[in-house]
Length: 248
Image 1: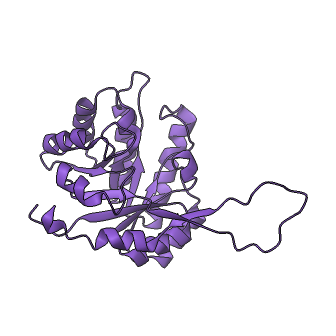
Image 2: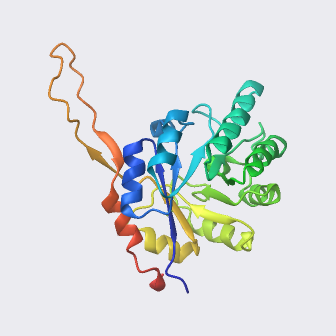
Image 3: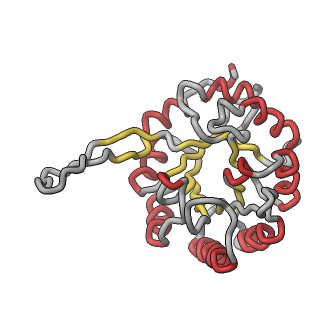
């Protein structure tokens, strides 16, 4: 591939995971909350803590709710305010995505969000709403014209390894005008093959493991099992960082 530097971005929904990503050697985090819903905008207290405790870049997800990526005017106004707040706090970037009812990129309103971000010198990633658009090639062209620095995508498939052929086509189409960053289903075991097949220069994942609760007391009248805590595993991040990309 001609390079031994692949940038690894870790998606986190807690400060513990953010610190674990840094410990493992990640270049950047995407900070969000509620990964079980695909991620939503984190609290400003969490953003402030991340900026204070980390020495790696922090991009913040701008997504007011779970579900689809068709937003009403009130949600759009909230997204604009969130980006202004992120800029004033000193975030390095934001992660956005909006679609029209017909599955095309909502160019008009995305342009507003991107303009706000760039006013604060923040980079913009277009997130996996891209994978829900009607035509990925057409969508990539629109995102490039909008001025996004990167697009996070699984190639329109449930996982990036499944979408590897499409991801390779998107990387080729980009002609280095935008970073095509594969995400979804990437592990230390398949990352090297994915990079080899797609020629990607950045990859994205949560790289989590299940951790047991440290609670000792459990209410005997509540029968539900205590769910494990899913957090970024620094060893999984480190394994990806340690891959010799020269052979990819």
